[in-house]
Amino acid sequence: MAAAKRKRDGPAARPKKRAKKAPSAPEPDADPGPGGAVPEEYSIPPPVSQGKWKNKERVLIFSSRGINFRTRHLMQDLRTLMPHSKADTKMDRKDQLFVINEVCEMKNCNKCIFFEAKKKQDLYMWLSNTPQGPSAKFLVQNVHTLAELKMTGNCLRGSRPLLSFDPTFDKEPHYALLKELFIQVFSTPQYHPKSQPFVDHVFTFTVTDERIWFRNYQIIEEDASLVEIGPRFVLNPIKIFQGSFGGPTLYENPHYQSPNMHRRLIRLSVAAKFREKQQVKEVQKIKKKGTKVLMGEDPTEVVFETPAEEKPVEIQLVKPESKPIVKDKKKLRKIQRKKQKKLFRTEASA
Image (cartoon, rainbow, N blue to C red; front, side):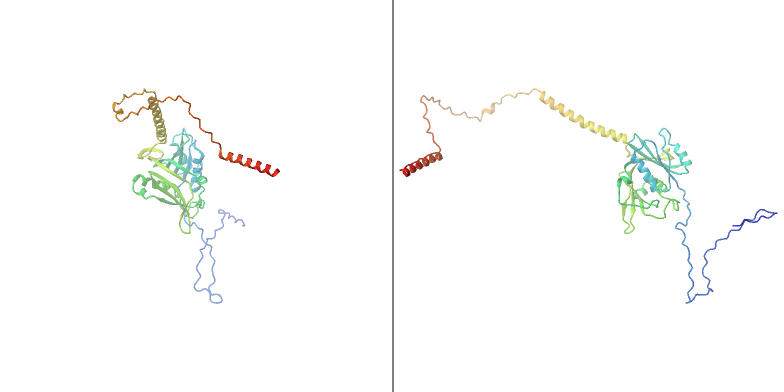
């Protein structure tokens, strides 16, 4: 492109950009082609996402130190399913939870999913709207990751999910608050740069046994049936706070039992069984060592006894006769046959 000539009296003149013209409809007075047909115009189809990315929800997903491999895989699965998520390094245990608000501000995130590990066996999940709140704390149970389940379902990476909620979420106020928090955290914003304009899976939140069960299903196009993909886990709500990672308590679950109390009750039940066995053994030993009480003779026992007749004692002075020895009849027959054979031989020789 040739450089524009500069004018002496003014600044350099810039070349004007050509304005884009929209494809115009064929004029009515246009001459038809041979055969009376109007010539066809080829237009380029517009892109799939014509809208603008307005919902700038960003979710920070990270954890504290001390998590096990299953929690790490679960965290990675959630990052894969949520294209609007961001990752960060593990947070030190000594730091206070209020520091997470500053981390979210530095990462330009307004929602947070934080996994907190305690005693290397208990896992807690924080869902928070930073920095104003509210926030909720859950105990995570029955974790099964994508690699562990090996389900037959599959979905497109980055596709937007449907969110399905149990009718219980609309009946009680604390469940309604959790429903709104789940919608803002797990729903992928429309026209997000990393998302795909398809809906091929659904997140289900079901309330059973005072717990929230999370499942991920694929929607099959043929008959709209559901096939599980994973991951799956159960959330046991503990508390809902007004602020982000703290503040006044809005709701506390009366049915919640801490893992420490659960393990303590199991130990007590095992100890009670052991104590019961020991007591049974001690009672048996005491019974064996105890002196036997002799019962007095009952005079009524002899009522039905009849004395036997006494037989006279006979003394034999003569030796009893010996019984004749009876030989075997088969042997006698053999001897007679031998004698007959000898007689026949002597007569034949004579």
